[in-house]
Image (cartoon, rainbow, N blue to C red; front, side, top):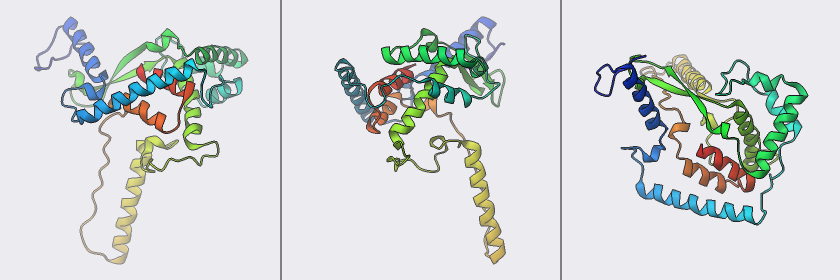
Length: 270
């Protein structure tokens, strides 16, 4: 479908395709490398230098055979647990295989996934298919002729997402401790993305409920004054605006080490 260029002029189909490509490359660029990002350049340089130091330390750990407390490969029980939690009806990645193929594939699917992911885990590599994805533009608001009014939905390989979900469980245990009593004092309870089962809808509902209760109490007590306006805005998607180098540094400082840190670092590099 034809779109307009940066100057608002309608483009040909060929130029429209190039416009989509350039726009996607621009929004996929690390946020700290974008023009007008507003970050402290000295801080960015320090974070990247720290990440280089950690990468060198991680390579040395691997050379010495130090793989951390979570070095064992995935078990069939762990993979089964991940598969049970997968949603239905989600779009497949470039290979056309949705979650349901693995979720309802029985023992054969569990065994195949466990062996394949175990090999990647122990060799510290990942399938080339994990680096490929389909980009599906989702119209949000504004003009359907303007690429800036779309959000690019990345459809990843479902096996890659299963692998990441398995690693996520280990990260939670590593940070929180086996009994859930780890040091997460730096995480605010109002950061919905950091709480299992919480997101923008839950945050918005909580904010609305608090405002309603406050207004009810104000009227019941005869308190004067104007009503209270409430606004909840979700301005940006989080992951495209995440500094990957800082994420790697923070994971290390939170206690993630060995194969787990190296595996997550590869995922963040995708």
